[in-house]
Image 1 (cartoon, helix red, strand yellow):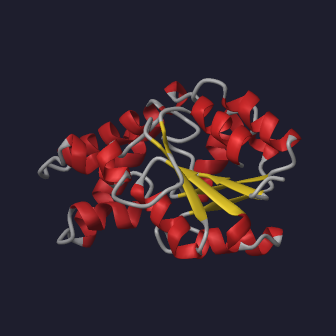
Image 2: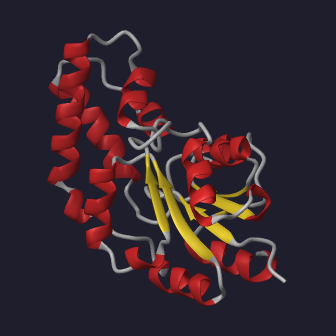
Length: 217
């Protein structure tokens, strides 16, 4: 008997290989506005947060004009190469298998609704998700709001919910909502960062996630 009914995935760095592109877009947006450019570690750390929280974290003293300028250039750089972002290997098959095994599937992401809808149009597995929830539709990660929304919508209790993500924001989201989590190390946060937050396992790839769920899910 499986221990989970609902599996909720982060998007960037968990299902799609986009963290390098996002970090570079953040850095380019600062350079375009003649502001100090965040290093790679800082640019990757904020991946998964909403845009407002991202730039407030990186630069808490930005003026409204500077903030707007960075957001504008970030969107320019991200969209410029958006078509080069692809899912990780075997994501479609893995999600199809999970659906066949009886799991409800959902997405909780810091992306905007516009951004996620655009991303869903590019992939061939969007139909497998019962619910998707975005960072601009409530409180962003690690506030439990988006995961609570998904669980309430699908009628699943936290004890039967598993969150899978590549950042501590995802793992803390799960903890704050009373759910369990799996960490993947193929995205934005390094293994030492992820292991600072309790998770059921720390896995290297989407294939390892599916294998773990076969044995333990």
